[in-house]
Length: 184
Image (cartoon, rainbow, N blue to C red; front, side):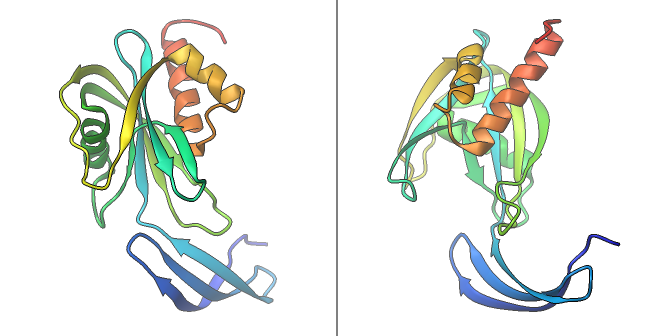
């Protein structure tokens, strides 16, 4: 049996500034009909930027859906058709006031594949030079530097709860440990 669901009909129930919501009629692999609700999002980027002192650059900002501050790696929404690599360079400088000499592609992250079509492009960055933040008018955040090993412990202790940040921190740590010849 092929694991594929065929879209029969799409109906937009909400079209917003950042997301659209669809209610689809689809067909299951066994031919039976089903309903699917999909949140469309243009996608995003996040970067695990590592300083020469082996610290990751984080931003702390208020996240409205949770009603509290959340500790995250620098990240941002993609504009329609925007190249993710260019976006991550922009976001790193805007949010953290940093420019990197080296970037590493850490792959893709699907935040919630059961209902959301968002794809986040993960990057690592090294050899940072610091300039000045260039925050958007509606952006309010604090920059923090946290040692890589401490950040890993924070992920494992559930002190860092943002999924994209957890994934990028752990990937960056593993790459750093392997390149340093450590066995962890």
